[in-house]
Length: 449
Image (cartoon, rainbow, N blue to C red; front, top):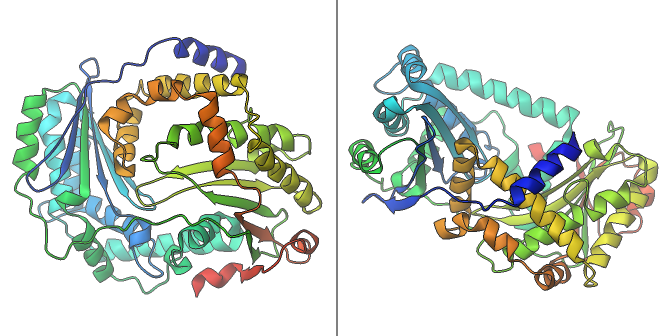
């Protein structure tokens, strides 16, 4: 199956990617609008991004952002819950989620319902009514999920320790307690849900001029409030040496090891060189790290993970693995050895061309879906990119040279300076940890403090 997927990607790679026409502008109230007419697509896709998420909830209140988007969808000042459900059932489908520094609302329906779709988005954002009973139900549900997750899978909170170490955010931002009130939701909404803090994108079969009239009608007179806030950009700080944090998790049958380093933002001229090097070194089954650790038994498709996060507020990358306690050192040494190798100017052209074919081919296939195209565009704009960069993504990636990628590998991968986060049984990881100095020790429930 994988063989045929790669053949398809190679075929697609030979086709020039033609991004659809896009127009970006702002309403007088500062709300950013992106219009992307795709006339062979009968569906209308509307995505709205609010520049606030988990990190903005406050101490022990990360679920505030998710609770807010749930409550906005439940009912409002003009429609009770039953009527709002009927409204959306008649025009399309609607879903949303909260991320670290933003929240996204997605709405899809047929082109004949363009005004109703735009009007619905306006209703949701402009006329909230926060139902106390629903708030209490969802709050208890989310707190239950968090508690169960921390008890059974403490390693799932590796991101909280990563953000605390590399970005300097307080670790208590990432676990909720029972003190969250409906006033927290109202404060969050009043602070972050305002036109200048939002991006609205529409794609599908519609007339651009008509869409502009409808957007102005339903959003143009929405005013920014006085008590608004914005999210500060966080600085990814480089580690001075190997900074180790151990989270004692006695019940884990396998330890989880995460290595994290600062990355580059999308505004950095090295971004695509870094992006290419990241994939060559450790992303996917054809990467150097995967092939190295595959010499050790470990079901690495499931137990190895890598990610490069570039967001509006932060940028970093991680490599993470689960292994037996007896193989922690072996896997760790292989990964560090790849970090060391990448600084020796030894990436070859075959590796770079493979990554280009894979990434450009997958991009073209993925962006055949307007839903995925909208998601990409709105997230890239939030991260600081421009319409021109988004449109020329594949051609710019194709232009990356071997010297560029080797330069990025030498510049950004440092085998002597990084953050190391370890979840596991203290006794079983003792030998591995003894090679490091100045280890921070945590218990898995320290997030609750």
